[in-house]
Amino acid sequence: MATSVTAAAGDSPPPRDAAHPSDPAPPDPARPDPTDAGRPSRAAARRSRLYRWDLKATPYAFVAPFFLTFAAFGLFPLIYTGWLSLHRVELGGSAEWKGLENYTDLAGSEFFWNALANTFTIGVLSTVPQLLMALGLAHLLNYRLHGRGFFRVAVLAPYATSIAAATLVFAQLFNTDYGMINTFLDWAGVGKVDWEASKWPAQIAISVIVTWRWTGYNALIYLAAMQAVPQDLYEAAALDGASRWRQFVSVTVPSIRPTILFTVVVSTIGATQLFGEPMLYGGSVGISGGSGNQFQTLSLLMYEKGWITGALGQASAVAWVMLLLLLLIGAVRTLVARTHRKNPGAGA
Image 1 (cartoon, rainbow, N blue to C red):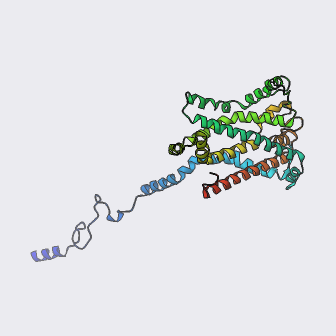
Image 2 (cartoon, one colour):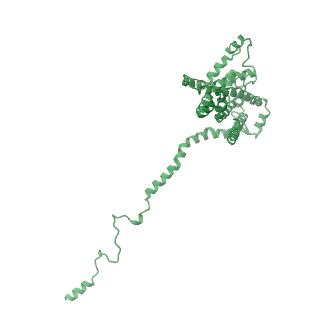
C-alpha cells in the first residue's frame, strides 16, 4: 500500500507555478530593458525634431516681415511698373500691348531730353558745391573747437527741416519782385534777376535749396570718416613739415576716399530723383518745371505723364529709364571701387 502511494506521488506532475530549471527567468519590472538602451523615446525624438526645426526656421521668421514688406511695396511695384511700360494704359482704361513703343516715343520726345538735361545740370550745380562745402566744414569740425558739439548739431538742422517749409522760404528769398536776393543785387548795381522764368537762374536757385539742405548731412558723414583716420599719420606729416592744408590734401582726403565716393553716388542718386524742391519752387507751374519747362526734372516729367495727362504707360517708361540710370551709376561706382582696391595708390 505504501509502495503504491509513493509511486503514484512520484508520477504526479510538478506544480504549474514551479519554474523549470531550463526556463529563462521572468523579466523584473523594476529593471530597465537592456535592449531599450540608446533608443530615445518618441517624446524625446519629437522634441529633438522640433528643436532642429526651430533652429533653422527662427532666423527666417525674424527676417520674413522685411521680405514680405519689400515684396509688397518694392518688388511688386517694380515688376508691375515694368509691365505697364510695355503697354498703353490710361487712368480708368484697359491696358493695350505696345512693346517698346513707349521707350521709342521717349527717345523722340524733346520734353524727355529737356528733363534729362535739366536733371543733369541741377545735379551738377547742387552736388559739386555741396560735397566741397561739406568736406571743408567737416575738416573744421574735426579740430578741437569751443562748442564743437553745438556746431555738429547745428549743421544737421537744415536736414531736419521740412522740405516744404525750406523751399517756400527760399522761393520768397529768390522772388523776382520783392525777394531779398534781388534787393541785395539791386543795391550792388547788378540789377534784378528773374529767378523763376529764366532757365539758369531758376536752376541755380533750386540747387541752392538742395545744397543748403544736404551739406550738413554729408559733413557729418565726412566727420565720422575723418575721426577714424589714425593720428599717427598726421603726426608723421607734421614732423615732415607739412602744413595743415598739406595734411588735408595728402592725408585726410586719400584716407576717406571710399566715403567721398559713397557720398558722390548717394548725392547723384538723390539728384536723379529730385522732385520736391522744383515742384514747390515753381508754385502753380511747378509740375511742368516752370512756364517753359526750364527746370523740369525726370521725376516731374514722370508725375506729369502719369497724373496730369493720364499716360501711365509713358510714366512707367520714364520710371524705368531712371532706374537704368541709377543702375548705371551704381555700376560705375563699383568699377571705380574695384579699380581702387587693385591699385590703392592711384590718385594719392
